[in-house]
Length: 396
Ligand code: NAD
Image 1 (cartoon, rainbow, N blue to C red):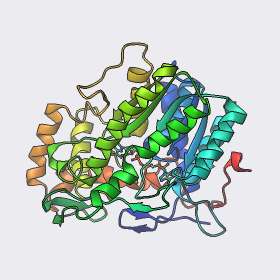
Image 2: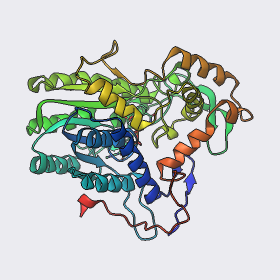
Image 3: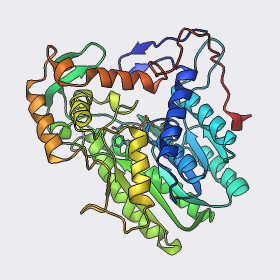
Image 4: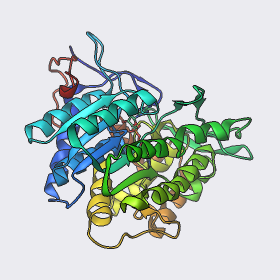
C-alpha cells in the first residue's frame, strides 16, 4: 500500500516501515562512524523502540557489539493498517542486529506489569545469564500499578498557580497564548506514580533478587531539566515532581547495588522532538527556537548523537564519572550553555506567528516530528508500494 502521514495534533496515526528502517539504518551508521565504545556487553533497554531508548539500544549494539533485550509497548501492523513507529523501528533494529551477528530479542508489552517483567527475567536467564547495563527510558501517560491494580494517569500541569505563556501549533506555525490550570487533587501523586522512580526500582529489585545482574552492573534513567522559560510547566510542574522522584530513586537503587559494585545514574538529556515531548505545551516553541540557535552554533544533536556522547564521553570513557552537584550526568550541557539560553530567551520575547519561520527552526521541528513516524526521511521513495505487514524476527 501507499502510506501517508495522518496526523491528529501531536500524534501521527500512521507510520512508514521503509522510513522507520531508514532512520534505524542512519542511526546505526552514525554510531559506527564514531568508532568502538568499550561499553557493556549485555544490555536491557526498557522503553527501547523510539527516542532515547532506541538510540541507547543502537549505541550498545553497534558501538559495543552488545547483546540487547528491548522492552517496549507498540502496535503491530495488521492487514491494511500500519503498525506504530516503534514496532517498525524494532523490526528494523533486530533485522540489522542479526545481520551483524548480534543477539537481539524484543518483548512487546506493558513494562509496568508483573507479566512482562517475568517474561524479561526468564529471557535473560535462558539466553544471557546476566545483564551488565539496564537503560530505563519509559515515557508513558498511564500506568496500571502491578500490586494495587490502580490505573494512574499523568498530567502536564503547573503546580500552585495558573501558567500562561506562548505556545506553537507546529503544524501551522500559529503562535498563541495558552493558560494551563494548576494541578489539583491527586494530579501530582498520579504523575509521580506513572513517571517517577517506583517502576525503575521494581525492575532493579526483580533483576537483583534473581541474580540477573553481573558484578559491577549499572543502570541509567533519563531525565530533563530545561530553562526557566519552561520551568513552570516542566521542572516545577507535575512532570518535574515525577523527575524529582526518579532522580531520588537513583540513590536508593545505588545503595541496593553496592553489594555487586554497581550504580544507578540519572542522565539529564537535551530537549528533543520525540513522541513524548511533542505532547507537552510550550515545549515545541522552545525546541524550535533552541534548534535554530544550536544549529547555528554547530552544536545541535539528535537522540543518537546525545546517547553516543553519553556512552563515549561519560559512561564508558574509563575516567571518573563527571556528575553535577546533585549527582547527575549532564548531556544537556550544550543546551544549557549561557550563550544558547540567552539567545533563546531573547527570541522567545519576540516570537510570533509572523516571524517564527525566520527566527525559529519550525521546519526542523516539523521534519523531526514526521521523521519519528518514518515520513520525510531522506532517500525513501514514498510513491513506492510498501508492505505494511512487518514482523519482528524474535517474535516468531
Ligand atoms: P519516547 O516516547 O520516544 O519513547 C518512550 C518509549 O517507552 C517507547 O519505546 C515506548 O514503546 C515505551 N513505552 C511507553 N509505555 C510503555 C509501557 N507501558 N511498557 C513498555 N514500554 C513502554 O520518549 P523519549 O522522549 O525517548 O523519552 C524517554 C525518556 O527520556 C523519558 O524518561 C523522558 O522524560 C526522557 N527525556 C526526554 C527528553 C525529550 O526532550 N524528549 C529530554 C530529556 C529526557
